[in-house]
Image (cartoon, rainbow, N blue to C red; front, side, top):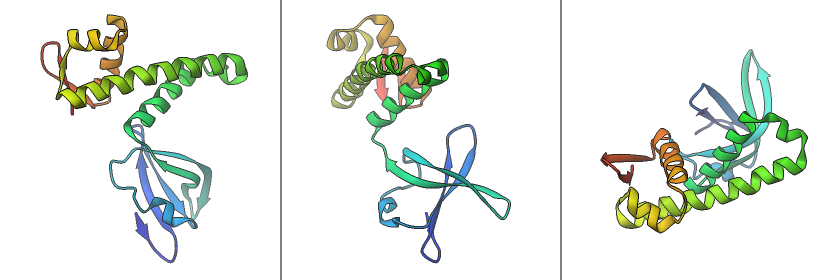
Length: 157
């Protein structure tokens, strides 16, 4: 974050590209945001002197659990954008995401508390299908938050 003349800016990266955020008020809301933090931003695209940037209306630092919840929702929207046109289907999708978030939250908690766990231990503790555990673990490994130091044993990064 840089402050110049009562405004601040961030450069954010979503893995596909970067864009600058420029804030002109409520700067105290971003004092605790640091490099590598995950944030949720809602704002307006603006252009000034041929520079495209986002002027945030809302910015929030996310916990890992909140980030995964939003990631699941975003993936559902990308896979089926028609759910935005059907409120009932979207709410069903959201309910499924909340259930998935509980599994992800519990899996992360178990890995933190136990300094890693075997696949069989996770299966026993989570009480969900092997396929679902594999799906959650693969998602977390793809994100770089979990790794497999030895076969069928998983740890948080």
